[in-house]
Length: 134
Image (cartoon, rainbow, N blue to C red; front, side, top):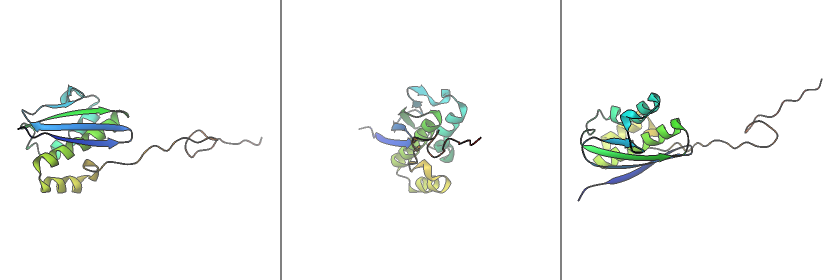
């Protein structure tokens, strides 16, 4: 039986679902190899969990991530969280979990902040239209 683990990550309105199993080192995001993901800043952010773990597992596992919602930056953060959670759960390595938490808590914990909605009487959530008395 093949051990498969499913995890998820969220950032703003982006939701990423990762599936991890033993394999040959393929990491795909929305059916695209992670090496081809654009822009480069998003790709580097998605690869953070592997950089921190020093690529111990990279060639022994396959990870498939499906992400939707949000923009490219939010999606990158969601994918990053999903991959890090999958690695920790797959390896059952407490030291790796502690390392992720020490470096950046958002690797394992979702960022729950959301955009505040716009209200009437102004151009944004809190800002108000200016008045002129001349």
